[in-house]
Length: 451
Image 1 (cartoon, rainbow, N blue to C red):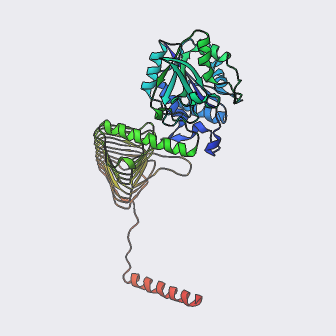
Image 2 (cartoon, rainbow, N blue to C red):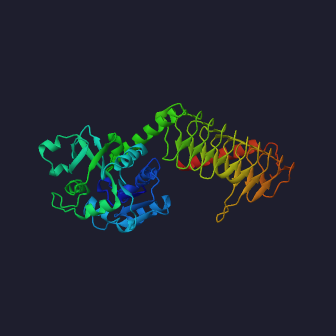
Image 3 (spheres, helix red, strand yellow):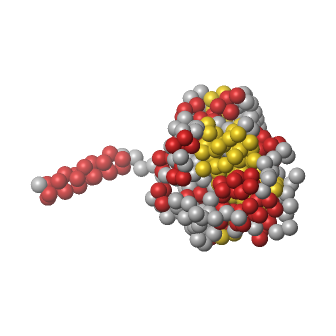
């Protein structure tokens, strides 16, 4: 049966001590809300509805950027979780499949868990995700009778016996759309908080002869994030899981605890990652590549056999073909380096296309920005760019061409040509010593005047 996601993302997150809406705080380079959307998207939903409140315009922009077809509805008054889900009713008009309710501040639910919920939904009208808590604290408790879920009771409304239970409510649930909204319509707010609890639909379902059950998952999947310390713990949890998954997949990681990954980092087997490497969003590293220590990569693609670093920076749009070498203190941005290109030392290559087998000498810079516009540099195959060459774009250096060290190249260089663009050296015998002596005398006079 088809599935729609309703993701609750209206909370302000006062404990975050931030002007940023809680669900937009980032884990591994992406807002928490994106993690939740990504988790639910594993079920290939037909519709996604995000319920926003505080910072709704900011939330809407993030939602649209992730999925332009997703809908955003507003919960202007914070009257509880049932009230929040009810705001999605109109956006789901005409939809008769299952609705999965997720939370924008609960980013770690696994695909396998959601699939288990979908299987259980085929046998029951309502499925709730629960977990056995090491410290149940103030979580709502799940009251079971065999495999049937009888009711959910909020901590503040629970008896002492109910508070002793360790099976807790995550808030995540699944039901048929018509059933869900019909049950929500019957929810009242006669409770300690005066709110419309989504959890009350379980008791209402039983009263109407419907069945409910619970699917359980590891407590770490249901981690809710409400404060900066919890956000930091969530980041650490993500990194630990992501590193372990890469190692299981055959990636060689020398010092896992020093590696930082993004939510979408993709690394192939037999790739090697040295210590203290940071991956920003949008990085793909193919099998057999090597990322050396203290490198930073974002928005780039590194092909098989390429070597990056140490101390290299790849920025968005960097495309490295097979066997490319990018060495220490080299920065690549919006540039394509073809097979076997070497740029090993102290260079900036931006807005450029570099042909196969070309060598970029130390200190080379593509001067791509004129203060208003960006311009592109094109270098052919098997060219040799001398050390400290300034390539003033737009400019083209041909196949097998060479530039002399220290040159400023402002015009195109034909294939097979040698280009020199530097001032003629003038040597003045004896002037070096005279200049030093003059400067020392001047320094002595200045010191005497200040004493």
